[in-house]
Length: 403
Image 1 (spheres, rainbow, N blue to C red):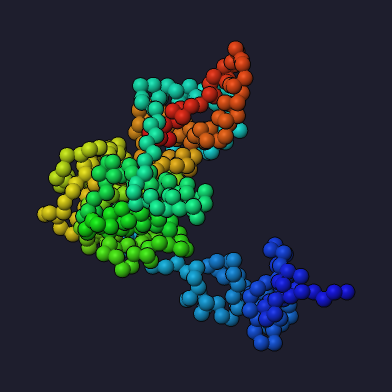
Image 2: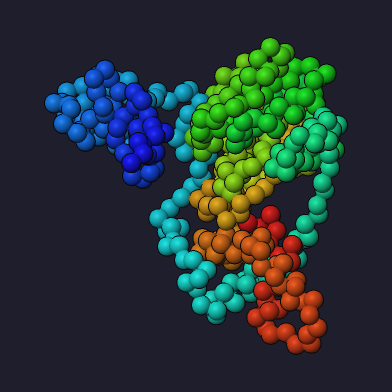
């Protein structure tokens, strides 16, 4: 009979734990103490340890010796950390009440009559609105080299193309300027800020604030440590971020421009509230190219105009928002509480229940059924049922202005 190979699957690796993890179909890879065969985490599985291990009360995913619990709790990585100065719970969450909380109903649970009624409501709400989606895919010279690099695969090319288009549109709207602080919401690795920095390498006094709620590996911030521009990162949920207290913004006192490449659903609403709901100012010195308006009932401050200089402004005062460039996505992840267009919905006779339904229906635009429907339409057919006509959803059926 052949001896088992110590590969961690058929037999434990040398000097590693001999506990077999059934879920992973291999042996534990943790180091063991001298003369031991099991690691501290799995010592209870055998009879090697006289001390009892218990789940950590802060995170039951790991265990700790019972007599060492007090010491462990002081240094456990799951211990709640002190809140930073810019943290203010639910400052951007929007108002919510129990009356607005409805039980979620899936599309599959709704009858055909209910769906037909919802579609009629949607079409009625859209009457008189320009819902035609105009695509404006541009590019930018800052990404010319990576876009033409054959080493980049399909996934990398897709992201580079999206980043180039965002920069191209920002340049068209004159949002790539000196004396600005760019705030990237949902920054992830910070690639969008990286390319904005490359595009503005000749500009003066340009700084970046990256907002991301989770810890991220392989961040590109490190590439700019020796640059003239400051790259500051805040690990906080946008829902709890008070930009007025962000150290970088208080220090620089520059007009800000919000950017985001992948702000899923409600994150876009949270970013809008974060920028405009508590930071409105009337000290701008340029006429607006576009106006951003949140409804008054949600606590907004009216029209926001872009600004170009910082003369006469004291550090630490309300922010001046010069512009916003966000690529919308994931309408199905919107949330009524955070939604900034409640007043628009109410004006159309709609509420939380319709919002929840439209939120789920928005996936019809990208669920793959359109390709299937187009193949069917290629076949000669003179008759169409009412149901087919009702569900032929074009690109303009669910506009970004509604969901």
